[in-house]
Picture 1 (cartoon, one colour):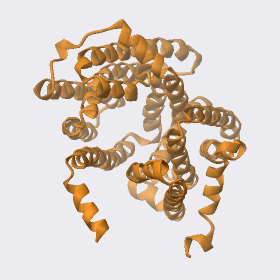
Picture 2 (cartoon, rainbow, N blue to C red):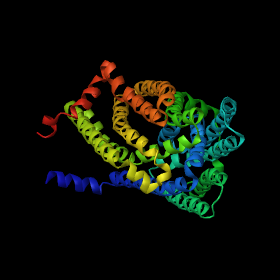
Picture 3 (cartoon, rainbow, N blue to C red):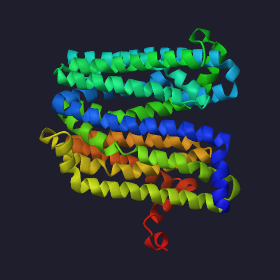
Picture 4 (cartoon, rainbow, N blue to C red):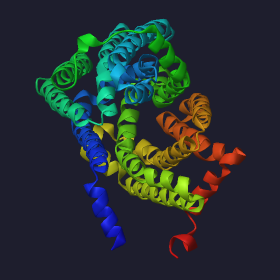
Length: 437
């Protein structure tokens, strides 16, 4: 009864309702976007075929290697400053916008300096240029930060839903008229431009005047001083996420990128589940940390149990159904992706562990561990890609990814004494006596 009363009081608490509604909008947008992206992505992959789809994925991944240079990792810092100093929102938003424009230009120069070292033809470089240009419009995402700071993300979600609907219709229309690959690349620009316009309109209607944004050197220096570790960490993550497809293209070919891209996209389509579970449970874990250390570690262990076994059950299911899934969704032409999917799906186990580990390090104020783990993961991934792609092709790339995640989620926590408790929490997930007692 006491729990019921507390639940009713919490439900009626204005602060709780505000944050719950905001989180609900964000979660709903994430789920809908995942489902629509899967549906539309399947049709695009079927239409383009492995080679053209692989070329599209490669161009996107190549730009993705440098994306952190444009975003600068200032997102959370900007939101923090907006919460602390809402009266200075014009200066903060204007400066953040300017920094992102400068970061995008720097990203373009980095891409221009790197492209000559690839074996890309002119067409591929044109695709890369178009996608890189689209990143410029993402500077307007600072408007999203403003709404997050005000806990009014529903306004952004309105725009994102409209953008998702319009661009999805455009992509399906391009398939219907049998458009060339270049048009699908152009959708990246249309997508980014439409979202930017939508955010501007929503901001002007609901929150403020974009013409009041101002650049301030003092604010710029503070943002850059606070976010430089995040920039470095973001670069590592960008490389980690995109390097495998870039290396497959350079070492094997675009068609294999198509197979690999389909497999990895399908293997990660369910990742919104652990993110939602973690975001929902972790506030309770943090609360326990401040009040009861024993309860803190017990709740952390429960989170390990939930996410590890969810990943294992999904991995085992996909292992036996991979060929049927590939055949059903993208057709027999992509059947070579089935065996890669059977391998890549097991990466989810270690992705979930890494997700919990990052939350733990954040709770313990040990952000440097997150950076060191990222550096280890990137190093292992690149090294093993060079070795395993040559020997096993795209299967080697999937094995390299899993090995890199094992190194960051298990090996790192075991070798570092003050993190070893996380390694043993993972092992406890398989203690049948404890689970079923």
